[in-house]
Image (cartoon, rainbow, N blue to C red; front, side, top):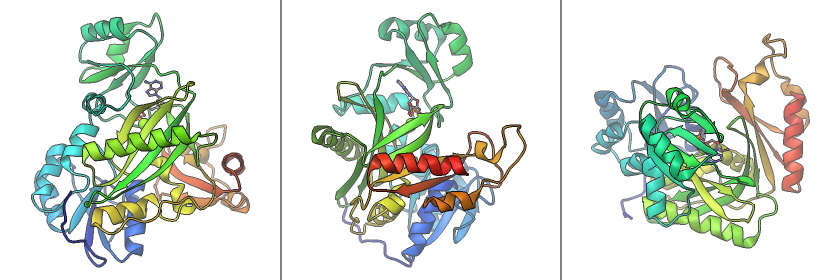
Length: 383
Ligand SMILES: Nc1ncnc2c1ncn2[C@@H]1O[C@H](COP(=O)(O)OP(=O)(O)O)[C@@H](O)[C@H]1O
Ligand SMILES: [Mg+2]
């Protein structure tokens, strides 16, 4: 906890990463009167295109990172795979929230799981793996089915393989290794939920969730808030876990805690995102304060906003696949049809559509979370 003075509107905020999470942060920050500089690997990134300034450089270029840090009053991130070394260099020139200690823990799955276990947070069985021999030994301990994942740089299910009983372990290692990996017991969950936590430098903290998340092909597909059929005990346990994670990490800013809920109702933490999360996009229309405005407030040391849910909300991702017809030819999605359904359309300004690439999302509010979910799925099928 620190009592550094708040960073007021008119100041310049920095964001590491140029993707859609940065873009929506820029929108929220500019609305509140801040200037925003985006550090991006490529010119014309989704966030860079709406920022006051786009600073193009490699994330590992320490000189470039230092000059970026000197140009802002505080920095945050929208992407966890910024080298910790770079954030340490940036911290010599400006506060970075969350800081390098948070990144160090959350950008490596083995460190992250060890941190969670040490913090007394429930996690499934896991073993570090960095060779084919270690994979065999880990399977002996954990059993199958299990999931082999790269320890670093994975996202949207990339760098993962599910190992079923009888799987060829050497072939799996060939596919996912070499390098640091983790073997996790396959969790037989009934659903996935997430909690968002905004935490200010004073230690003040607000929570959103549980949000229910449906995945398709290991990529988030649809999120719903409030998560249907959630007992008060489950909601309380999820809130306790998320609070413990944010406090033990000493994270300032906005983080997300992804969890599995098992058939007996118990929760296990899957992973932590030290940044806004795809499952929180529905807070833009669905809640009094969006996850992005909350990130601005937390990072600047302003009072946090109310996370109150205004109406049940559901979000459906729009992947690049929607830009192609079944015969593979390019097509423009039917935005007019989508808008007729009452959905809010968000597009990230990406130049080209690719299968599996997150291009935008739809959000729809309704009277119940179940209605919102059905309606947003129907809206997406209309485009
Ligand atoms: N141990 C596991 N057991 C069962 N399913 C898993 C496990 N780990 C991951 N998954 C599935 O794969 C998805 C993506 O994995 P995750 O670890 O969250 O990586 P990413 O960084 O790609 O989001 C999860 O949301 C979940 O649906
Ligand atoms: Mg995940």
